[in-house]
Length: 120
Image 1 (cartoon, rainbow, N blue to C red):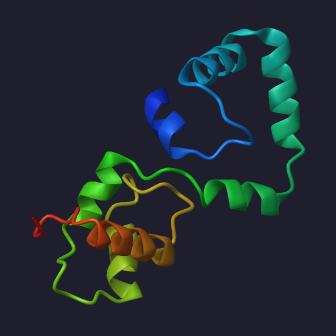
Image 2 (image 1 turned 45 degrees about the vertical axis):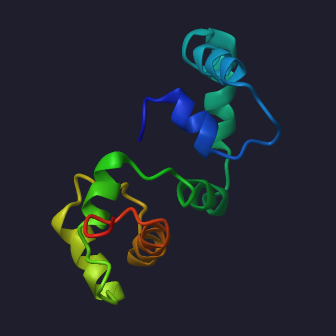
């Protein structure tokens, strides 16, 4: 979803506090250390489907996703159908596990922080 580890460091809640450097080192180990990589893959294969769904529901929104959401006007009260239409029109932009409800909740946060296109 993103290749910006500083965004991951700022936006993801980890099991304990890690510095950006520690996140970078762990990511490098996952990618390039054959033993750690193999262990991580085995652990991911053993995850329960509910655990996978919970993890996927917390995936950070990309800039492209937020750009599309920002175009929904702040003066409107969009229904779930509005966000379902966005998902159907832009399947290449939205993360596959996104739901209309998840988009609506994120849009409400963006509206609260004046991040919509028609807000100053």
